[in-house]
Image 1: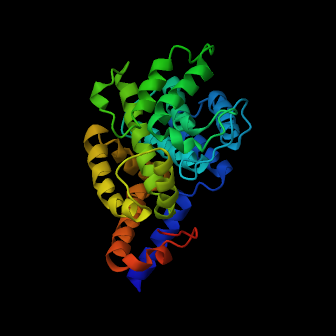
Image 2: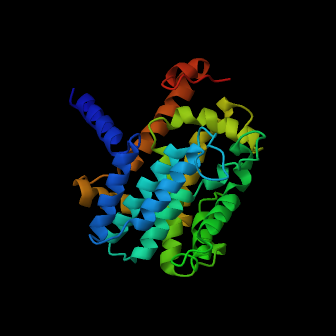
Image 3: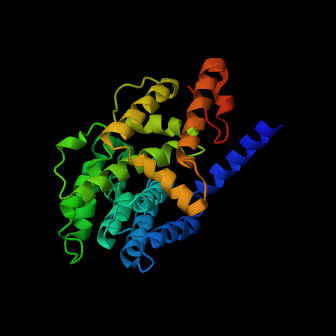
Length: 304
């Protein structure tokens, strides 16, 4: 009974601390966490970009259609934003100092990192998923256009480019010539937040089905069917663990410092949620290959 109660408590904790369904609560938590770094932090830049990015995904931003990718959607952006803020705070707890401008760059990079999936108004063929292999380049172009004439950020266009480039799984971080050690840290944090944010989502396994459809339209090689993607996700997790620990400097360790300081929890809630997702996937694949759809039914998933 005690073990069952612990599992139930863990489920509640993961659900509460990783829940991004209410954007207002996400904004509130992000601001609270950043204020723990600097209680005088001014959120004007963040607020402006958040509103514009939300409009972009809703199809209300001038010149762009609404987001039509079911995996890389606004909820994913919120996951990454919240994880990024927590990593920034955890780094601060561990003694790493960022300027207010660097914090802004980190948060804004998280908000805009997947802007490259959004189609322009006159682009009516297919969905934004067709840009999967070039979405990083398109996202960087969007943010550079956005800040081209901005007096505060126009000298940081290369920094935004370097940071967002880190989210590419095929990118060799060592090849990027960062302007400073802090910019390199922000890039590794964003890449880590991108991975941890999506893989800790309680609906991560269900969302692998629309992810396959994005891969299919974007001509991403290596996955024959949705089921094939599910099977290979377990190995993908092992690859991402190595990437986070080595290529990304193990900045995921800052999550532990954050949760201990913010919530008095001496645990990495993100890692626990990811492990839970992957362990469940492995169990389902091992024991229920013919009826896997039943076990991923919360979003009415159909496996081919």
